[in-house]
Amino acid sequence: MSLIDEFNKMHLELKGQKRTDELKEAMKKKYNKLYLLSDKLFDKIYEKDCNSSEVAIIKKMITMKIQKDNGVIDKFNADKEIGELLCNTYVKPMLNKQKKDKNK
Image (cartoon, rainbow, N blue to C red; front, side, top):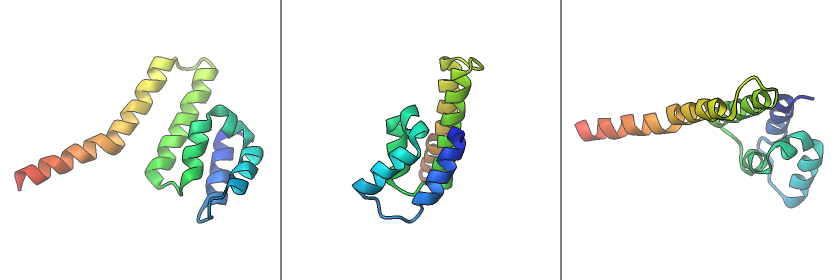
């Protein structure tokens, strides 16, 4: 199973479930490739039900990791693409809102 597949399955399996220590340990075993990729990313996925923006960001991070590991992209360009996605998702909407509020 690919990392993206593991993420998709884990995300669906966790949807609406109460998070417990036992469930987390079971998920670590079941989705071990994802856990080994990044325990911090795994924890982010596990913590709460991800919204569509968070899902897109996580998929991009996994894709960039795979491409970096396969030599398709270097770390600088992978980080740049992820940074641009984060900026477009969080920073630009916040700045646009502040600009609108200021113009009122």
